[in-house]
Amino acid sequence: MNPRNIIMLLDSHFASANTFSEVTLEEIRMSEVIIHMVETSDAFSFVDLYFAMPEDDTDDPYSSDDEQKELIHLYRPKYNDQQNEDIIDRYFVKHQNFEKTVQKRYPLLKTPKEIHRIRDYVNAGGTHFQKWTMIREKLFEQFCEWKRQRQIVHDNDLKEAALLLAEQYDLPNFKLYNTDQSGIKLEMITGRTLTFEGEKKITAVAQRLNALQHSLTIQPVISCDGDIVEPTLVVFAEEKEPKKFQEELAEFDNLYCKSKPSGLCDIKIEREWFRDVMVPKSEPGSLLLLDSWSGFNQALEDDIVKEHLLIERIPKKCTSRVQALDKYWNRPNKNFYRRLCDKVRLKYHAHILAIRVNIARMISLVLYQWKAPRFKPLIRYAWNASGYIGERPQEFVTPAEFCLNFQPSTRCFMENCNKIGFIRCAHCENVICFAHSMIIQHRC
Image (cartoon, rainbow, N blue to C red; front, side):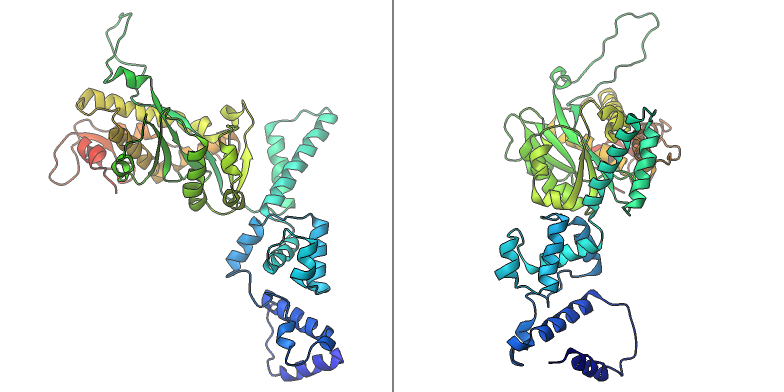
């Protein structure tokens, strides 16, 4: 069988189709099938030609171009570059059978579709994960070289070198997240108060002294573009979780509620939170910054987490400098929470702060205000102050400054309500009373 005659006949048949377009992945695969049939024609009759197609070549491993790009950049190869080239050569050039030959030589391969992804991965020059790893290694090599030369190196020098490497390896912009655990007292109290001049010993009242000594844990997630990922993990301090726990807290859709006797997060909760919240709510291929807490380790071994996120760990004793939440989010958040507690104790003392549902109400209200677009520059400043983004955000106000500073005589804007305002909503800018903001949970 003469291959040139076959090409001539095909060209003659499709001569009327004189329009040209960019070669697609499907067309390349079809041409490979035809080449395979021609080169192995002696072994097949015309009846058998359909079965000459390499296994699964008719199935597109991607349902769309967007999915193709996503899977390529999330793919983490099971073999090194030399082995990947050999896999591609065996399957696409030598047309070896997948199950009988290729898979026996490379048993980690599960389906022929994976070979298509390996080829696309090689053609793309590597995945986001591999490029990120290479940049990190090259940056460290550059730093070591500077130190061998006894050069003086500053933070900005490393940032500039990293940006140049990112351009060199064609690493696109991607979403950057940071999550961290923070303790919240069951009842918080401010350390400052107005009093009489010259008074040496200052005392203040609390609703429950025991609540000042016990804490729960919240674990917020912020992104470098100023968003807060919801729902936020909250671990309540419960000796034994009551049967009505989830039912009682179900109304707070911006909270992911769990409980432990200590009020501290553990490995099981962290693993569930990653699967239920972080993976579904974040963009594939995003970078998540975590501190060195060992409780994250098992959650990060989850295959779903590893395939969806790039993870970087912040070294011990460095979080105060390079963790965005520690740099400038936790403090204004606690200040807002604390001032709300002070206001409740002063004016609404019948409302017990340390009750489970009231704690959830307070946290839910605080986090809802944080979601307002006006606070995005503040969150971006946390990233800027940590050194991750270069552009300093515009001027901003904190939630406590905006939500609690309004004309004291302002009444609630809700229809048929004339009560004194408790808080100003950061979304709609209306002043709302205690009942409509804390109990009924006003949402714009």
